[in-house]
Each structure stands twice: as C-alpha cells, then as structure tokens.
Length: 242
Image 1 (cartoon, rainbow, N blue to C red):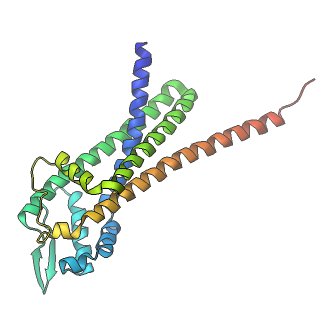
Image 2 (cartoon, rainbow, N blue to C red):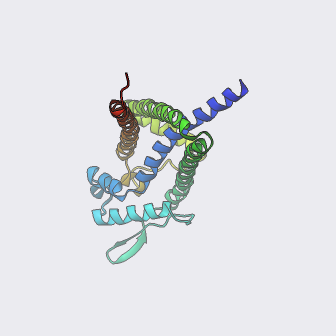
Image 3 (tube, one colour):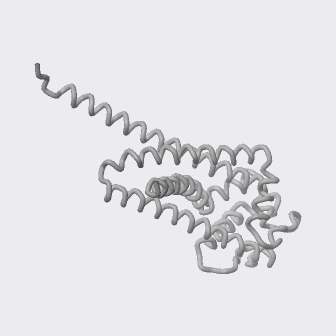
C-alpha cells in the first residue's frame, strides 16, 4: 500500500509538472518576445499615448527584454530624444521592475525545475522498468494534457469575463509593496503596457498552452494508431498453420 501511494504521488507530480512546464515555457517565450511587445505598441497606439515613436518604443522593449535576462539589479531604459539620451522611467517604476524581475526569474526557475523532473521521471523510468514503462508515460501525458486544458480553460474564461479584478488580485498576491500602483497619466510603464496588452498576452499564453497540450494528445494518438497498424500488418504476414 505504501509503495502504491508513492507511485501515485510521483505520477501526480509528473502530471502537475507537465502542466506547469507548458504554461511557464510560454510565459518565458512571451516575456522574451520583442514581437509581442511591438504588437502591443501598434495595437494600442502607444506612440500616441506616450509621444514616443514606434522605433523608440521598440528600442525600449528590447532593453526591457535584455534586462530580464541580465544580472542588472535596476532597470535603466535610455532613449534618445532631440539628440539627447535620457532615462525613460522614474525611480518608482524602476523599483517596481526590480520586483517584476524577481518574479520573472522565479518563473524561469519553476520552468527549469519542471523540465528536470519530467526528464528524470522518463529517463529513470525507462532505465528501471524498460519498455513496459512506455504505457504509463503515455497515460500520464494524456492526463497531464487534460489537466492543462482544464486549468488554462478556467483561467481564460475568468480572464475574458473579469480580467481587471484577476489582474489586480495577481498584483496583490505577487508583490509585498505598493510600488506597482503607478500614476496612469504620468507613468510611461503603464502607458506602454496597458491592461489590454496583458489580457492579450495572457490569452496568447493560454492558446499556446492549449495547442501544445492538444498536440501532445494528437501525437500520442498517431503513435498508438501507427503501433496498432504495424501489429495488424505483422499478423497478416505471419505464416498461417492448419
């Protein structure tokens, strides 16, 4: 009974790790996608809201992306206006982005940890149990994909119906200070990345995660069909006696 409980726990962790890996991988891709930033700048007419050109905004987005992947503690986005280079953000925005970077790096570590668990589970499982382990991995991948679909679907539904309150709750849960409460009329950060951008990014991450989960299920179904087809062909070619 104790061994069964451990096996179930390890399997449940695999299911959770798969869902976490898919979602956090897409979060990481989104945070590093300059194309996504530039989409938001164009779609929400950020150039008109900030007085900055799309080229300046793109350069600011590139510096933001680089900051998330650097060892720098404080953000210093610099743009050139009338042949003068100046910092774009004020101190409160810079300090808030330091908190955001800590959160982003936690997401990175969670993604990497989920990948390591998935890799070790599959590798050690096949090493210890051999080909018999394949059936269990397939079942867990299907369950993990279904869990991903349910979780992402629930978040997407809430985001479509009440993104504002959900986004506010996220800030209260993620940050221990009020630095994120910026003035929407003077903050370049808020004008560059309005709530609509974050709603679109959240939905994009959800769509990508759903597509990947469905892709896993489709791939497994194709592999199962291929295996059954090969078995039928092999039986049909086997010599018949009697």
